[in-house]
Length: 170
Figure 1 (cartoon, helix red, strand yellow):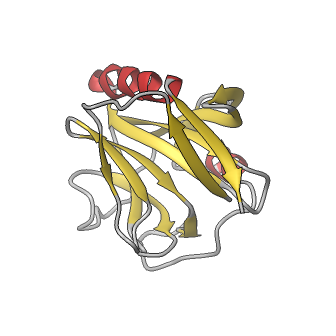
Figure 2: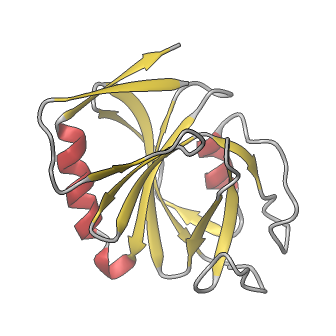
C-alpha cells in the first residue's frame, strides 16, 4: 500500500525524516511518528531478534494475539481521509535478555521493509498503532512514548493528522 499526502498547512514544529532507503518518519520534540511497511516480524515465542518470519497478513490480529503485549480493543477510525484500525499497545512480558537495540526491557516486534530497522517497544511505554489497508497489504503508522508523556506526542499527532489528507496510490 502506498500513500500520498496533502497538508492544508505546514506544521513547522514537525520535521520530515526520510532517505531513499528509509520509510517516512516525522519528528516532534524527541518523539517520532513512523509510517512503515514491515518486512518481517519476530515470532512472539522467540527469545532474541535473530528469529524472524514473514509479516502477518493482518497486523492488528497479530498484535492483539501477541502474548508479550497487551492491547486496547481495536477500533475503526477515520484518519486524514482514510479508514484505519487503531489500537494502543503495551509490553507485559519483555524479552528475558534485553537486546542492544533497546535502552531498557523491551519486545522486538519486527523489521521495516527496505532498511531492516528494528521496531521495538519498551516496558513503561505506550504505542498507538493506526493500521491502514487490507490484509496482506498493510501500512503501520505509529508513535510511542513513556506512558506518563504519551499525551504530548498524542496531541501533536492528532493536530498533524487533522490537517493532513492521505490518499492511496499504486
